[in-house]
Image (cartoon, rainbow, N blue to C red; front, top):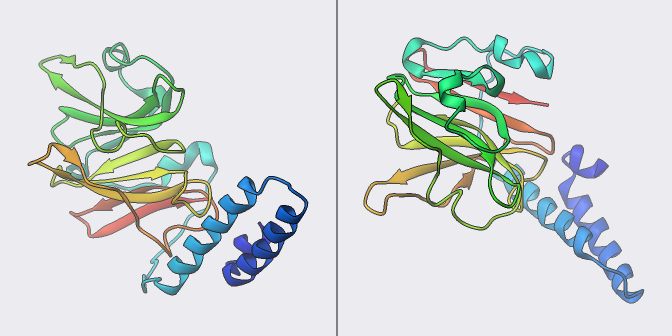
Length: 223
């Protein structure tokens, strides 16, 4: 874990290969080690393909207050903490909510995370009809397929098609990693999500990736 946190993925792979071989000789379980090995390989591939990105600023702030740092234009929509959503919206949602809600510019659709029947956090959407909101629906192609780990922190571009969110699971190198997917209107499903890689993702938690197309500025949060 220390090697991973220091981005020394090649050394981590070598160390894990040795530990897995030793564990097999002793007839010990290698499940946890193999999961770490997979993350190390993902990290090595990401590091080799890292894009050159310029970060124009950064702000250190407490986790409970991080939304205070975001300065978004009106056309981007709204990001709310789940605890602050309107009561008429909350009434249509059963289960435990994720950290944030995204409401589009028109104010007639929201994306959020909540627990499913298995207790995992899955992405859902709801529509506004007049003054009422529809029952929460899982996002087809993401929340309707079996996968490991929780998903949270959704954001949708103004095109209404491109969705960014954070998830932790088999294709993450840390806790939460940022993923991107797009809605296919022909199949009415979101396509297979892709990890957006480094430098946005790291061996730590990375989440809430937002592109403000009006200002041309992007935002994201990292632990």
